[in-house]
Image (cartoon, one colour):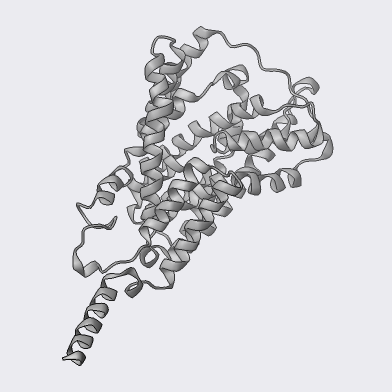
Length: 387
């Protein structure tokens, strides 16, 4: 009798062990859990994009708790009908990114760009990283649609990367999104060495003329004119740029303050939570750690560095044709990538290292918001040609 009870208890313990994650874990889950913990520590300790990295990092932990898939528990992000899967539809179907663009528009002041329209060229120049990454991805054997989705990482714009990959390469949404947001968060680490490498001590001390005061009427007309101009050129950018300019009109009109406040606070916060958590959860180790994912991370890093190179070098090129009093400090060229506002802050911080009284933030913001528009147009171009 005693032996029978022991065998029964042992069999029950074995069965219980089979229900736990310990029975189904492999090294890839453990690697991704370490990545998630790393993201969370970057956010808390270094304050690198905490609003993004904490939801993504925790989502990575969530997605890498292994379980028995054959049991049909309906809890995983890839199991149709589960809560996580329903939330993930906003990523797969691409409707989270336009909502984030609505919030970005409602919190963006385009005055710096309107004051110096020529700085839009810096935002355009930084998009060279996207097309360089596209060529590299094709060379490495990715299909054209996959190469286009990977290339957009060079714009350092997470929502745009998710939007485009959901249309062109949904199987790569996870690694593309994680790469894009990782490099956005690491802007203060990646960009300064490139900026110092490409500029001389004299160039870093260039003082730019203060931005002019932009009248209210001009601010109101800009989102309307911007929408018509950009979307007539590239209609496939409409979901992103349409919401960006709509949000900005809510802000600048002066008569929809409640709507603007909702868009730039509650709405964008809610969407960011769902997007970050589900993107993180989609990175299950057994489907995420692949040779293609590693190539995507490498291409993303290269395209981001090339984009920074392009922006700084183009600023130096513009100075060849500028009079002495109208030269551009090339340290703002890095802000042509659309990591708003972190890349503009990097311009400011690096500039202050060499002159404590030379404030570049407002000038850099002109290039920065141009980068947002430029990356959305670049995404539209890729979508038009590759769909």
